Image 1 (tube, rainbow, N blue to C red):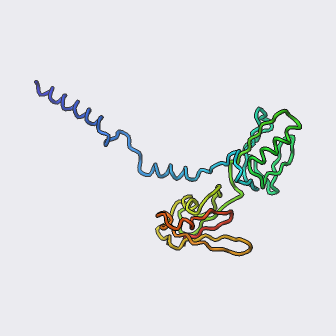
Image 2 (image 1 turned 90 degrees about the horizontal axis):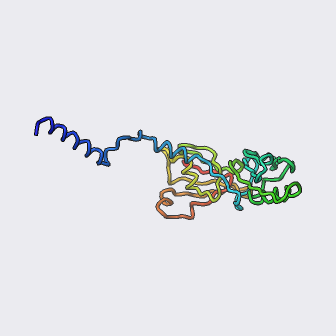
Image 3 (image 1 turned 180 degrees about the vertical axis):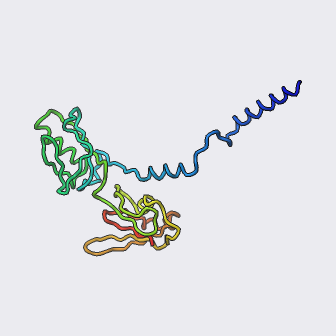
Amino acid sequence: MRPAAYVLLALFAAISLRAQDPKKPEVQVQEGTANKTAGKNAQTSVAVAGNDTAYKIGAQDILRIDVWKEPEISRSGLPVRPDGKVSLPLLNDVQAAGLSPLELSNMITEGLKTYMNNPQVTVSVIEINSKRVYVTGEVRRPGAFALLPNMTVLQALTNSGGFTQFARTKGIYVLRNEGGKQLKYPFHYKDIINGKHAEENIELRSGDLIVVP
């Protein structure tokens, strides 16, 4: 066999081995892209479904109200006013604050029965603005966060982007105003993530303040 043929065979073999080697991908993700994507997704709000009975709508929440086959009445991005009401065609002002999405859906359905046969209404909360918790101190993203149903201290800390290098995780605590008094709840982060003292990972209430010294 001629030398040129040996060179060609060696070249084809190298190409074949590279194609079969999973450790050498042709396309590489830039460093930090995955973390940026995860961070973006972590900030995405979770809407409250129309069949939810636990969440109570509050002022400044943003609603979506769908009336089947009635686009003129349906509304998206509808804010709940400070007085707790929303305005809808035919019904004018409707009390929304204090009701669950399902309860508000039933109320609107009953009101529309005067004007149409068998109205089908779905209500969902697309932005939670009325109920917030606060994280302050040595976290990467301190501030106010929407209080989602059954949200715990650990979940709120996750939303805040994690701790800074100066955080004293043994000294974390939650401040809550209850009955005119300020209550303090300790939260030992390392114990919680190791499965200890689960009772400290309390369910948050609107207005709670998490302090990371």
